[in-house]
Length: 331
Image 1: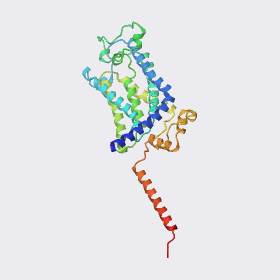
Image 2: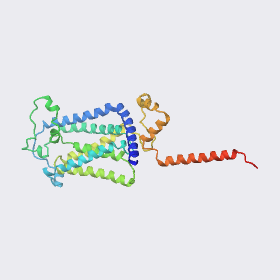
Image 3: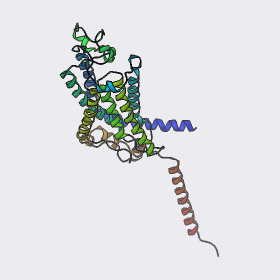
Image 4: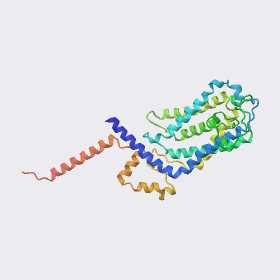
């Protein structure tokens, strides 16, 4: 009985959240699609610069002197940390569909994230096409067959970017690190919109956010130790991405905070006359109130039911007293 009841609650939460997110997606899909298309353009640009890459001796690098070389057999360490950060952020961004406490809408969050990524990646493309450095990665060094690419036979060969091999074994797209763009954007976004408190307490939340920054530092060191980038690629990423996020974030409208349970959907000029408000007005008062509670995590629990029962009981007692007082008694 308990499992069935909780499963019903969960399904109602997911359904209510999906309804709201779909309404936002129908309005914001152009910007989201543009951000996803630019991810392909960024990959295409990285593939194109590989044709211009010329291997050469490694440049003098302070990070290479300070950090021991991990070697090809341990190159997976930096990719493992990056995969963990990527999947963790992806799962966290969809937690409003399930969790009771929620601070943002997933559609609006990814709209913001893609804006940060596109701005940073555009600067990256301009930078690595300006000057091609000899790649420090093992497959980009002199003597490797993958260090240079023969001229393409046709345009389709370039457009397909040889995914995923072309992405994993690219050369020439160095300044600045793409892995660090994603890592810093994800960490900064989580630091701002991650929950400040939950059942474990606010101290635990602060520790998790500090751990996220620590993971970003570890990722930076592993990239250099794996010789996948020069130290300058990582350093430039740290201040460029943080500045990009800072300025772009100021230009974007702030997302509504859902912790107070008052904000259902962000109000805009389109919402006032569009489908979102029309859809909500079609709901009667009781259904709309329930939708608010489900969407913002304010579900009706057993305590509320007990209070209503007590009030009803008290009301019944008052009524019985009134009836007894009104009834004449014999003398």
